[in-house]
Amino acid sequence: MLPTRVGTQRICLIILNQPLNKDYLHILWRKALLRACADGAANHLYSSTAGDRDSFLPDYISGDFDSITAEVKAFYGDKGCKLIETADQDLTDFTKCLVIMVGEIQRRQLQVDAIVTLGGLAGRFDQTMASVETLHHALSMTPLPLLILQGSSLVHLLRPGSHRLEVNTGLEGSWCSLIPVGGACQTTTTGLKWNLSNQVLQFGKLVSTSNTYEPVGPGHPRKPVTVTTDQPLIWSMGICEDGQ
Amino acid sequence: MEEELTPLDCLLPSALLRACADGAANHLYSSTAGDRDSFLPDYISGDFDSITAEVKAFYGDKGCKLIETADQDLTDFTKCLVIMVGEIQRRQLQVDAIVTLGGLAGRFDQTMASVETLHHALSMTPLPLLILQGSSLVHLLRPGSHRLEVNTGLEGSWCSLIPVGGACQTTTTGLKWNLSNQVLQFGKLVSTSNTYEPVGPGHPRKPVTVTTDQPLIWSMGICEDGQ
Image 1: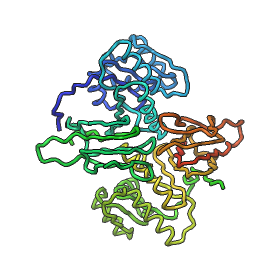
Image 2: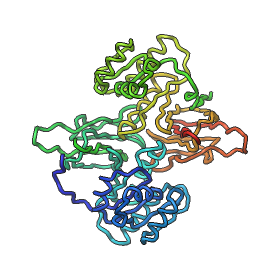
Image 3: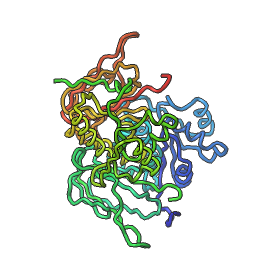
C-alpha cells in the first residue's frame, strides 16, 4: 500500500552498528539535515552504498573506533567526513553520537522536528536495552523526539504528560504497544483497540503488547492515538512491510 | 539463603519435556527435515493461528498432544508455560530449569512480552526460566541473593543487569564493573556491556553473585562457534 501523504518532518539521522535496511536508509538519508554514523555503522553504510558511496557521506562518524575498519575509516576521512573519537567511558556509542548531534543542531541553529535512529533493536539483548536507556537519557538532553527504527519495529519514549500520535501515514503495521520499561506508569489512552483508563502499566502486572488501532469504517482514516502517562513510557509500533 | 544457578548448563545435553508454542512447530518441522521422528514434542499449544495445517496434521498423526488455548490476554508463551508447569507437577518430575528457545528477536513488543512472561513465571513456578536466542540468554532474578556459575566454557564475553520494571537496589561480585548497593534504574544506571572479573590464565572464573531487592534481568552472551 503506497503512503498517502507527503512527509513534512525535518529530521536528523543517526545510524547504528547493525545491518541496514536499504529502503529506510534511502528515504531517511534524502530528507535528513544531518547524518551521522556511530562507529561500526560506517562499515554497514560503506557496504550498503557500494556503487554510489559519494551520495551517502555522513557529516560525522563518532565512537571509540573499535568497530570501524581501517579501510572504511580512511575512505570517509578522505572524503571530508568528520571523524570524532569519543574515548571509552560509561556512555555507549549511541549516546555519545546523540550528544554530538544535539550540539551540532544547536550550533547550526537548525529547525528539526525529530532525530531518527536506524538500528539498535536487534542483536545482543543488552545492546537493545542500552538503546532504550539512551532514549531515557535523551529526555534530559534535548526536547526533540528520538525515534529508533529497525526491521519492522519503531520504538519511542513518551515523556510524562499527554501525547497525540498520528497513525495515518499508510506506513503503519497492524500492531502497537505501550511498555513500562523503567517502572510503573499510570496510563490513559484513546484510539487503541484495547484502551487504558487510568490504569497502571507495570512489568509483572500489566504490559500492553500486541495491541492494535481502534477499528474504523472502510475508507475512514484512523483516529489519532492519545496517551497520557505520569512516567516515561515506551510506545512501540509496527512498520508496514512491503506489499502489506 | 542464596539461589544457585549455572545459566548455560542447559546447553550441555538433555530435556525431560519438550513443547512448541503454536508456530514454533513450523520451525521445528523445517529444521528437523530428514530426522523428524527424533524431534517430536510432547505437546503443541496455542491459538493455532500460526501453525500450518500440514505441520499440525504431521505432529497430530505422530501422537503429539495438540492443546488449543483460546485467545485471551495471555501470550502463547505464557500459556505454554502454564501447561508445562502443570505437566511437571502431574508427572512429578525433578526439574532444575525451564529453557525457552526464541522470544528475543523480531517485533520489539513481542520481545518485551517475553520479558513480561518471565515476570509472571515468578508467581507460577519456583523453577528458573531461561530464554535463549541467537547469542543472548535472558533470565529474571527474584528478589534475594543469587550465585551464577559461569564456567561451562559456553559463556560469551558480555553480561548485563537490566532493571526492566523498576528500580533495583543491587550488589554484585565477580563482574568487571561491580555494583555496591547501587540503584539500577532506566534513566539513571543500567549495567550493559559488562563482563566477568578477570582471572589469571588457567584459573576458572569466579561465580557472579547478585543481590537485588526487586526482580532484575540477568542477560549474558553465549559463546559463538569457534570462539
